[in-house]
Image (cartoon, rainbow, N blue to C red; front, side, top):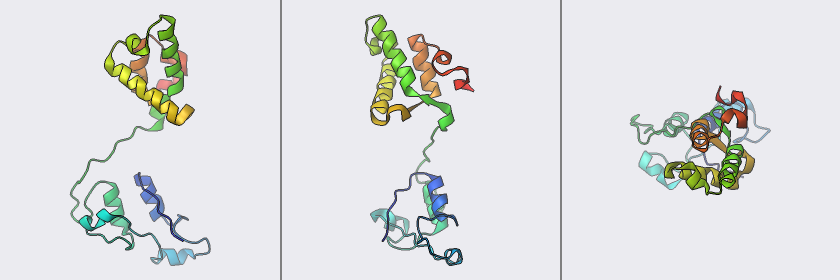
Length: 167
């Protein structure tokens, strides 16, 4: 039985190509067999032909790494810019700030959008609210965004998250 797993991050490629990945081999497979090229990882997708790869063919580790980095594996040409993602340590739980901003706006009898005073901030706040609806308490907000929203709402992040939120 085979499984297809979407790959979104370089760490996923590295894991699947590593010696201790258990996702592509039966549990009883010998490690020596794997190290000798026994991996069952295969390329899938209709766009592979444009990259000189064959769907169903074995995954070439160097090609996989290059593609994950947005480069043509044959020439090294940069095809797309690599997505930049903020380290989770640079984020805070959105719920505390969203709740505090809503309470502050309600206390003066206005909408959050009016309370924040700028359309860009209201838009960012609405994104945070949607994130909470999707992910609940797990939704994180970049610290820089939290600082801008808190400043506009007259809130102190240290009061909401403690003094270590910005270290």
